[in-house]
Length: 355
Image (cartoon, rainbow, N blue to C red):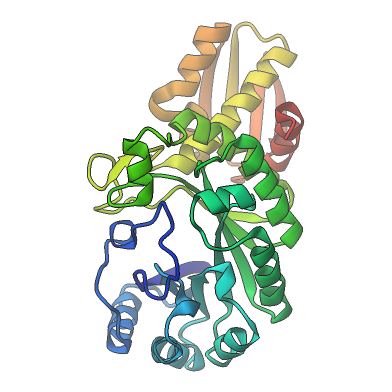
């Protein structure tokens, strides 16, 4: 069954810290308070556009939801709970900070039929957290995550790449510590320098440089493979583009791309095909058969993968649609056809990358 999310943005409510990278008004595109009536209107408007046979969830995004005044929490959640009680909405999701979780909070969320909690962790390196003025430690993350799972909520974890003092090794270590907590899913975000933030000040003083796009792709491909091999879903790579989140507007600089995940997955496929070419000493051509949903990932942005393989190996790659599942790929060279599953591609690259 297809899933559909009804997003309700609760901008910067309750956040006890102004993290160095954060300007919620810019990030969410919302600056006004949200009332129970607003929540009801948002849900009703979205329901009008949805098919009958879909799994619908209401998601409270934007601020640290469980740090909001408890009366406001209950006012907003009660509206969503009405739709859960009627069987119209299947899940209520919210995002919050690791240091805004305890037994009393979780009891209240249970009573309001919340089922999914996402923790904005960002990093499991204490120095990165300190430099980013997060106001919590990795120990707080472990405690909150374990408590959320103990209460039976579905756990999601969010991480950011390229915060102050961050590097590839720390990103991989954060992923490993996430895996140890066994979340149901994760999100991977690049750090962008947004206007009117502490990070912009550091950038203007030449005290901070964001990851470039290539570095972000290289790290993200390793994280994606690491999580997928552990059967942990990666439900987003990159920030969703809004009117505000775009380079030249409220994003000063940083590795922003509207299709970052596509670039990451395309690079993964290129790496595997390149390895296939080298291992089989291919010097002429190769044909890749894929589900139509994967054609653009194999071809690459503006045919970048085709061009790369031809310029480096003088190998002409053609990509053809085939009746294959989305996780199946076939490689043909001199009439020899090899079919492989995506998970086997991940395993091969895991060893090559030495993650």
